Picture 1 (cartoon, helix red, strand yellow):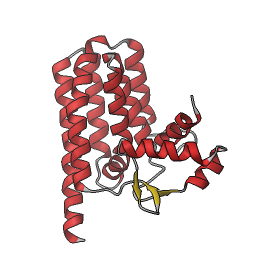
Picture 2 (cartoon, one colour; picture 1 turned 90 degrees about the horizontal axis):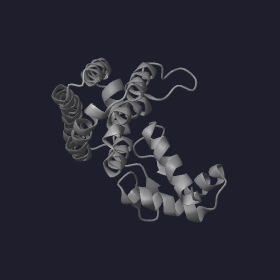
Picture 3 (cartoon, one colour; picture 1 turned 135 degrees about the horizontal axis):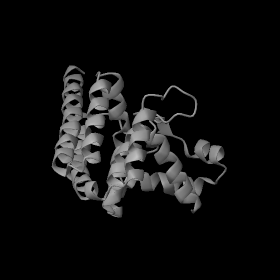
Picture 4 (cartoon, one colour; picture 1 turned 30 degrees about the horizontal axis):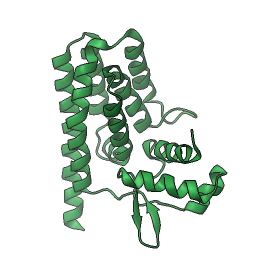
Length: 214
């Protein structure tokens, strides 16, 4: 892994975990000092992340995490709905006991985010979905899904923690895992679509209301 790759992966992981919230600015000199690298690979890594929409650059102000908007939520979830059901549809028949156990472990860990060393809710959420999608063996599709999960991490936290979506999300994940255990592809894909659309609709409505009252 090159230095640029290392910096990019570090920032992406922090975005996925929800550690870098909307509007937070990333100072190149501070990040370089923290990671023990020069500013040149940091700048290149941040530019890469901006190129895939995970960060944005402002003139003379550097990089920052995009703020939450209804338009951004609509785009991200539309892309998830276009890609993730395809990955799942291809993966269900190929899921192994190990894949299913990995998904179940991610579900079990999603409720223990307060424990030291436990994954964040968004990290556990991606681990669950990744375990179900990876057997599709579509590397590019999985990479795009990974980018989208990093992009929607702040939205997912808002949905789970502020909009009361945690119980629904947990129930939907368990139903999805059960359908995958049964090898029921059509039910699994339908459940995934319902799961994604429910979160998207709640978030977009909330953000539109916030924008209208601003």
